[in-house]
Structures are given as structure tokens and as C-alpha cells.
Amino acid sequence: MDKKIIMLLLLSGVMTFAMACSKSDGTKDNRTQSTSVEDSNDEGVQESSETTEETTMYDNADDNTDISEDYLSGIIPDELEYIPQGYENPAEQQGRLEKLTYDTWESFTYKQKTQKLTKEAWVYIPYGYSEDEKYNVFYLSHGGWSNEYTYNGLRFFWSGESDSYDVTQGTQEYRDFVLDNVLHSETEGDIHYNVYIPDDYDGSEPYALFMTLPGYQGLYFQGVGENVRTEEFGFFAQEYNPKMIIVAPQLNDWQDTSARQTIALTEYFLDTYNIDRDRVYAEGYSGGGETMSRVMGMRPELFTAYLQCSSQWDGGYDAVVKSRTPVYFAIGENDEYYGSEPSVRAYNAIHKLYEDEGLSDSEIDELLVLDVKPTSYFTDNGISNQHGYGGYLFVRDENIMGWLFGKVKQNN
Image 1: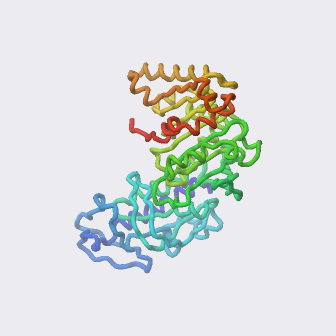
Image 2: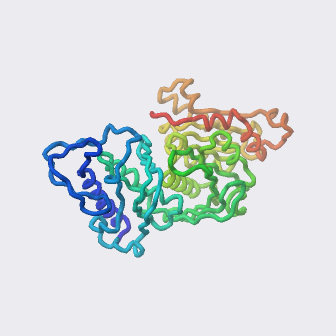
Image 3: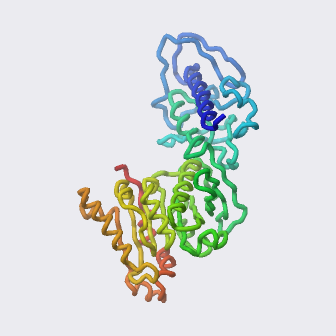
């Protein structure tokens, strides 16, 4: 059977279960019913007769509301009527059932409600999910929130073009980056990346996300980890926000293929980790800037802000103007590879589009920065090569890096 059909059937079963839970007895939480309720089994699942009075839901519940075991539920093997036919033996399907004990559970709601629990629950884990990622699939049915939890907690089952992500975890490390992880995309092929995840990340609170794309010397065919060995954006970024996951892709070119792979990798992290959607940052140096500018021409709305260093803009302009994604151009006036002219042209083109939309100069200045560094900026630091050492200086420039990580997405 098609994977998406199976997953939709699974969601249908879970929704049925959620509806049953929402009708359960809630006398512990001051809800009223006119008829009695009998326990149907030892797992805390109850069946309710029809009510004559309207049930009070938890729409106004406090974020720290205790949740009784009656409302804690998941995919429980003893209740196979809630699992579509064919899932009785999950080993033959796309995942496994596993019983987990946990202390906290992140609800994945837009308000980021977190319930404090010490409970056991059954969870369905698609193949390819790591030990840390499996906690993302908890399902909690709690009164009126059940639909919201179902949507936000289980949505990743059919994220993107595939029903679940297939990832090979890297085994090497360099300065706390795990090297050569591979996202196997059905549409974009194998996407190699290095990743830094702070030790205190446990999924209980949203973390920022930073995507840093390297120049030619850091592409995958140059060797595993060459991007983090030769560029420092991923390390200096930690000083601006310690609660940030940092992803350093190693792609194979700076064309549309790599741009689409960058988008797929970004979506993977947004779907799989607890990411603060208001703090998703991008940076591209040299050829990485060419790639990321193409991303800005395709899916700029994924990002809070973009920093382009010692590069040129190869993407379209309309999408980034529509999304109001801030862009900062940093380049030497005599960059040996690109020169500063391509950055000036891109800045002027985007500025004109904002003018046409009626934005004032001060409003545009919040969204668009052109920073062409004079030769003295380099020579005063003992540097003569503006392109090769542009990244070395820009990553140490607090005005540049502070601009990027100081941005928070605004609702337009």
C-alpha cells in the first residue's frame, strides 16, 4: 500500500482515538457529565455514554495544568482497533512501536505549551529516526487541544516529498561538529552536512537554526569536514546565541541543485527539531553565497535573515522582496574574484523593488544593507587578499555578525 495512504489511515485512527478521549470523564478537572463512565481497560482509555450537558474543554487551561493519566494516550498495542489494518506488526511496515518513559513533553503548538509529566507512553517511530528524534512523535490527547496536538505533533509523518526522513548519522567529530551526516532525499539525492547541536538541547524548548554555506574549498569533493576546517562562521556563531543548532552543508556545486538541497536540508531540521521559526539564519561565503542567493530566489520565507559574504547574487529578487527577508551584503571594494560591482547591482535592484512597493528609505535600511569594505579595512589588519580573507575578517566583525543574529522575524 502507498506510504502516504498508510499514514493517512494511521492519522485517521489516531483522530478517532482523540475524539474518544475528548469525550472521556473529566471530573478531576471540573468537567461535568450527567451519566457515569466505566473504565474499559487498564491503559487509562475510557468509553463515555452520551451526555446531556455540554462538556467543558480546556481551551483556557494554564500552560502548567497537570494532566491526569486518564488523558495520557498514544498508540497502544492492546487497542488495535485504533491502528489501521496491517499495522499489527509494525516491523513489517515503516517503523516500530516503542514504550518510553519521559519527564517533559513539548506540545509542538504555536504557543509552545509544555506539560510537566513523568509518564509512560507508546510512540510510533518511523524507520530512520535517531534516539533523540523519536521523542518528537509523542501524541497527547488532552481535551480540546487534541486536534492541535494531532496536527502539530504528527505533521512530520508526511513532510516534504517523503513520509519520513532517511538520515545516516555521521561518526566523526571536529570541534563538536558531527561530520558527514547524510540526508537521503527521494527528490534531491544524498545531502551531506556537518552539524553542531548544543549539549543542552533536548527538544523541550525551541532553538535557533543557522545554515552556513562554504566557498569552493569546502565543497564535499574537497574532503569531509573541509568547510568547518577552513571557515569559522559555525564557531563564532555560537558566541551570539548558545541555544542554536548550526548546520554546515557540504554540497557539490553552487547551482540550482545545491540550492534545492539546501532547502530540503533546512526543511528537514525545521520538521525534525524544535526550531524557533523566528530565528532561522543563513550565511553564504563565496560560492556558498551564490547558492544561498538562489535559495533566496526560491524559498526566502524559510529564513529570518541572510548574510552574503565575498560573493555575488545569482538568484531572483522578487521572492525575497515579497517575503521581506533582510539581506546584508559584505564584500571588499576590490574583491579579487567577484569585484564589488555584482553586490552593488543586486543591492540597487532589490532597493528599487522596495521603493516601488512604497517603502521609505528607513524601512528599506532595516531590510537591506550594502557594506563595501575599503582597502584599508583589510590592510589595517595586515591582509592584502580581499576575497580569500574576507570571510576571516567578516566573521570577526561584530557589526556584521551582530546584524545577522540580532534579527527576529517580524509578522508582515
